[in-house]
Length: 317
Image 1 (cartoon, one colour):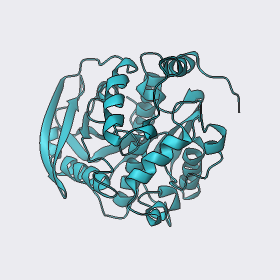
Image 2 (cartoon, rainbow, N blue to C red; image 1 turned 90 degrees about the horizontal axis):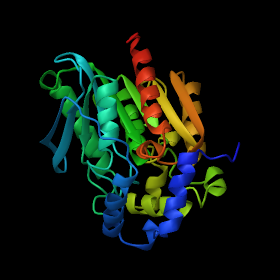
Image 3 (cartoon, rainbow, N blue to C red; image 1 turned 135 degrees about the vertical axis):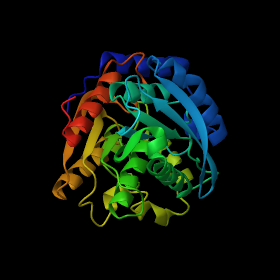
Image 4 (tube, rainbow, N blue to C red; image 1 turned 45 degrees about the horizontal axis):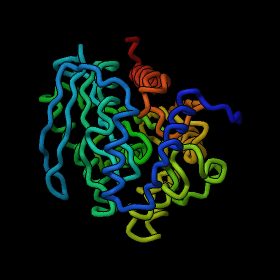
């Protein structure tokens, strides 16, 4: 694999080195959230206008959940596509604002309704609390489909990093009838194996943004005990079978500790007879889709995901 880095990705890494940002694992989860919220706006792409944005309260198994609802420009008033967006952040950081621009891109590019839940975070709420919140948000979309203007048969789940993990698990739950059915899963550099033993953890352990030490810190905050690592709801790559899950778009970054497990999951799905479109950005780093201010491939990746999602539906639009 080439060691060439995209110019924008290199610039982002250079900024981080220049400011000597403290590793997240050297502080508390609260401190990590403050630092992430303070720094992420400087990296995000344009928050383009959409038809509407609305925050609502829904009830989940663990209590109230805020969901942000985006209606894309040109979206249908009924029977349109719907998308459940699950933000990344290692199950510990991230919120409704940290991935706002991506939700806006999806809403407009797909002319769809996007629902993003503010799911509970670890370590205050360990596995499976956040996952159950996401499942409740999917159920909300299915039950409120008419009000949201969507066709419940046209709902896709999408997530990045830890959100990609949650989206992959929801797809498996939907296949088994433990969550409402979905039409597609769109995964950006997903966590699929919490054992963290893939070779890419060695190749890109440091110097490429997300480090192996930070990822271990995230995981250890998320799981209740080491036994959870082998639970397929934490490590979907370990599911007994992935057959009959929704078709998948899986995007990976070449210089990312998660690239090997993302690639392995794409291959596992393909071996299980699932329709998969796997796309590697060899010159990118983890989280590049959230760095649209400096990385043009960020929006391009969302555009590709939308195109593939449409192809799963057989839509020429």
